[in-house]
Image 1: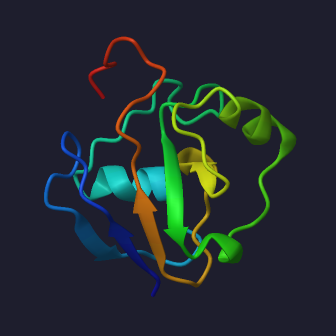
Image 2 (image 1 turned 180 degrees about the vertical axis):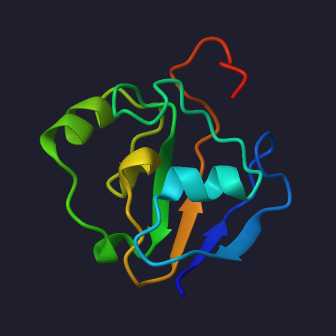
Image 3 (image 1 turned 90 degrees about the vertical axis):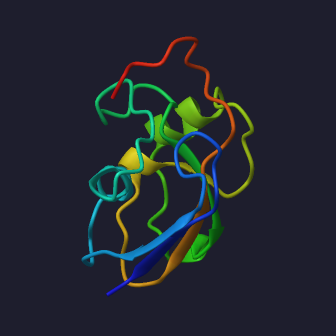
Length: 112
C-alpha cells in the first residue's frame, strides 16, 4: 500500500502526518479521511485551486494532469513545477510526500 507523508502545515497539519492509502485512492479524500482539513471549495469538482498541493516526492508516479487542471493551477498561490490539485490526484503505487501551501486564493474559509 502506498504511504503519504504530509509535511507540517501550521493550520491543517501542525505536526505533519504519515499514513497508508489504498491503491487508486483520491489524494484530497484521503487527506480528509485522516483529519487533515484541506480546503476544497468546489467540492472536489476541479473548479478552483483551494486543494493545491506540491508533490515533493513521487510526482513522476502520477498520471499527467488534464488541461482543465493545468489551466486552474495557473491561478494557484505558490505554484511550483510539481504542483497538483489534490482532488485530481489518484495515488497509483508509489509513496508520496506532499506539502500544503501556506495560502490559497480563497479569501474566506469555506468551513469544510
